[in-house]
Image (cartoon, rainbow, N blue to C red):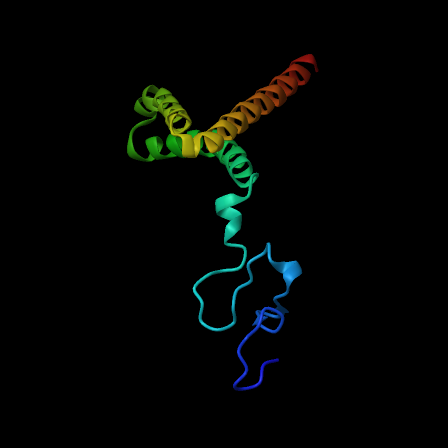
Amino acid sequence: MLTRGEPPTAASTTYAGAVESSEQSEVKQTPVEGSSERTFEWWHRSHPTFAALAGFFSGMLFVTAVPGAFAGLLRLVTTYETAEELFPLVALGLVVPVVLLFRRKTRRFATYMLIGMVITALVVLGVASLVLYFMVGR
């Protein structure tokens, strides 16, 4: 610990339960004293797999949640017949990842979002077809 009057050095600066040393230079620690930076702030900006993981799981959620939410909202607002007629408009949601593909900054995210959407759709359709096959077979 520092005593009064001593300037902080790299070996003696105390951070949120850890002492900064030359071995810890890659990971930026949050200082205990009123800094606005947070620990592991770099994860969202520069980690190579963050965009891929976020995009893949966003694609999975997009395929499962958006059509259901759209159908539920249509059903609440309109009659059953009108909701049936308007449901194909949910395909306009595919515009979102396609637009994200055009910008260089969001291209990696959009690529993995599309991969997540395709894989989720294939798994859902595959399981549904197997269930139907076994139900009709019995």
